[in-house]
Length: 502
Image (cartoon, rainbow, N blue to C red):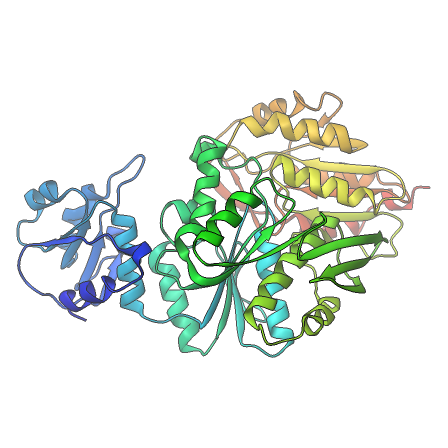
């Protein structure tokens, strides 16, 4: 595709995406690819020289041109012109947005119906439940996010909740080529703030909640929420559907944004007035009996998941699938909820339901997520609730003491250990958590902490191993090691004696 044609097509996208860049220089090269990493540039590629907090992409323009770049996206045309006088420049005030527009046009293929889910907690569970429900009724469906790209099985692992712009549109094109018509994807605050999801036609969007996380990046909660809100103000199509948490303090603001754009709103939650309302919960060790009301009609059934917040995640997913097939009776979808399976690393039961003690692995790595997990699991523990957790290094330090306070308040016994310390001193992280959890026991080494926790288990106890969930690696001193909480628990359980204690 020639550059002139690509630029013309990108200019026809929705008003929310228009930035009207200037194309400086002469020539109309044939474009065969796009990259924002100069090392990935090949002859015929457009190179996006993106600004960064630490490194400016303009520094790599010379390298990109030497590798065959035929055009440069930049907000610093004068500097680029000095580096490469003959290369066409796509000058724009927002290079990330322009990259998204061009990537969408270049790859030119997406599933017919895309639902995006944002919020601090619950994104992975909601998108997985949406995918499961679509598959249960025979739709060709996938989910994309922290757990990777999934259809009926994991196709590709990912370390990012939202892939970079170019790879995202490559994936969308691949799914379209394979006739996958439905996609549920996670929309992280980083991805929204960095315009990675722009150019994606989003027919429905869900908001789960907003609690403290990623303040090392966003600096304050107002900025954090603003990034999340872009999904509804800028990206969701005008005649689409927003599924919003009625219990959240952000509901009214998001509802107002949606109504002003002609977006249909479906609310979910525990409070009176929600379109999809949780009425009653009766927990047991292996499942929950629940009663819900959907558009004034009550339903009663068994859900094979643990935790009230997982029920709310299911209700968010229900709102999305109801919106995706509006001609279907709601009862058609509610009936499928009975068949939902747990999501890896999200209140994942590692022991069998008839074990004398239970061990649960969960991804909870924020104060609110840890609180939700502990509150939920208290209902399923007949005796003590034991919690093993840590906090990531080189991330929001302010949440460490708060997480300690949450665990101190809600757990009977706390073992403070290492999460992903990265390049920080692990003991220093544990000490900051202990400021909020003075009765906690500091245990160096995550495996050692899990082993100690298992040894303390007695009949009727429940052990929560929190923080890493589905993750299969641990980052220590800049190195990555294989480490899975689920696999470690299973390995240690083989010779565990703690579960035999009365």
